[in-house]
Image 1: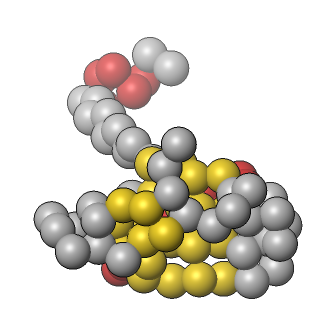
Image 2 (image 1 turned 180 degrees about the vertical axis):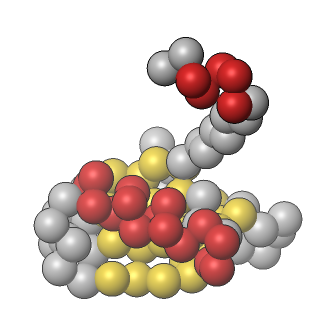
Length: 85
């Protein structure tokens, strides 16, 4: 079980986030600006957005929280392929 990681650091914490899915959406929106690649969502509705760093991270997983590393896939289609859908 992950309790500490020196590969992540918290870049933003938000209170009163209603769900884990909402926390993930906050991360996705924060990718360009904060480089969010993971979240830690607590039972107290706190959402921590995390970015990956090479070393010396400061991330401690909260007790009874849900941690997830997010993978973003980008699909490229040409206009001919899009017209088929």
